[in-house]
Amino acid sequence: MSSYLDRIGAGLILSKPEVFGFDFVPEVLVGREDIQGELATILGSIAHPEGTGRVVITGPVGSGKTVLVKRFCQDIIRHLSDKRNIKRVHVNCRNAATPSRVMQKIVQDLDPGHPDRGLGVGELLTSLRRMLHSSNTHLIVILDEVDHLLRRSGDDIIYKLMRIDEDREGVGTLSTIMISQEQVLDLLENAVISRVGRSNHIRIPPYDEDGLMKIITQRTELGLVTGTCPQEILSLIAQAAAPSGDARQAIELLEGAAKRAEASGRSIIESKDVQRTVVTMPTNVDSMNIENLPPHAMMILLGLCRRLKKEESVTSGEAEKLYHVVCEEYDQAPKGHTTLWKHIKRLAQEDIVVTKTAKADVGRGRTQHISMPHMLPSDVERRLETLIPSRLRR
Ligand SMILES: Nc1ncnc2c1ncn2[C@@H]1O[C@H](COP(=O)(O)OP(=O)(O)OP(=O)(O)O)[C@@H](O)[C@H]1O
Ligand SMILES: [Mg+2]
Image (cartoon, rainbow, N blue to C red; front, side, top):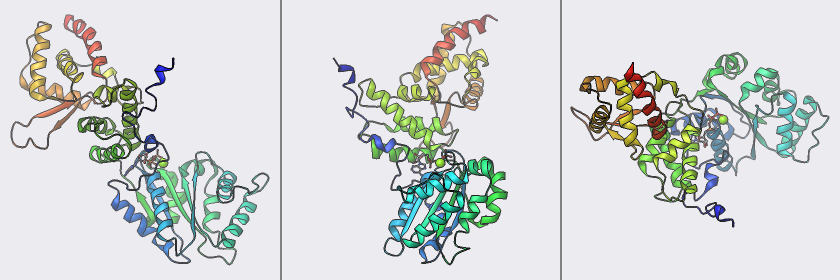
């Protein structure tokens, strides 16, 4: 009766689904050793009995800002556990964009029984100060997505927090870590960066394809059954997420593809699982690009699609042969090698395909490997089969 539920939880591919949860923090951050070192240097003062630190971290979406800070806090709390009593509160300013919401979140996190209603910001600050002093605690306050707070309420509460020690005898009570996406640098510049100090500003770059590949390889090892996700599939996912440089997108693609494969009863992820997942995600590929291609570029693409339905990638040599078959089908004289390459380059520029030279193929006449991470080849094929005849008739 419930046979349709049999595949749920069968764990054919996903062995630890929690590894794909949004709050999962891996023990090791891949490829971010330098930035972790930079952060540790800036906040190294926390290791001193009365030291505090301040830092601003900016970077594009999915560049690992939040996970970097969460990892750092867990590590430093553990590392200094016999020296200092350190706690951290993570405030997402998207949900707490006013001073009182920020303060409520901090106080509630430290003391879940604390009455939050009816207290003003000043009273909450006093409560916080008292709590930290009486328990001899150093608090790291993470203001994540701080631009939401700045835009809505200005920087007042940030300064009140930073100066928590000033009007009383306390020292070394609180450190602040502020995180924001990069494109609001102007907003941050005046409000925080200039006052926290430019040397306390860490700018995180987006991930490139290689970086994404390493991250999803790690997730595969942590969360999937061994042997269920071939290397070519990982490459396809890294290619699909590379234009955004967003690690979250890459991880979601891996998880989505794994679930799709499981749902069809398979224990190995195939390229169509990735492509089907990609098309359900918001992407930067404009599908209209296909409609505007010259007829021969369409025919090249059709040849590619037919093969990419079954394989992860096609070599340039195969692409040419496949194109010739399509030309024959539509009764067209094939264009020469140079034109073919010009078209393939355009397909790559428009993010319809991705071309890559295999590392092993060095020297002249290098073989290109063409893949289609952003779209489902069978969908593109179907569209091309209606488009091409009408284009050729013109
Ligand atoms: N170096 C890394 N190693 C392992 N996992 C990573 C790494 N960088 C990012 N991730 C993972 O990628 C995902 C996105 O990272 P994170 O949430 O930290 O990005 P962000 O920069 O805070 O994005 P946003 O701007 O949207 O808040 C998370 O699942 C995170 O665990
Ligand atoms: Mg974040």
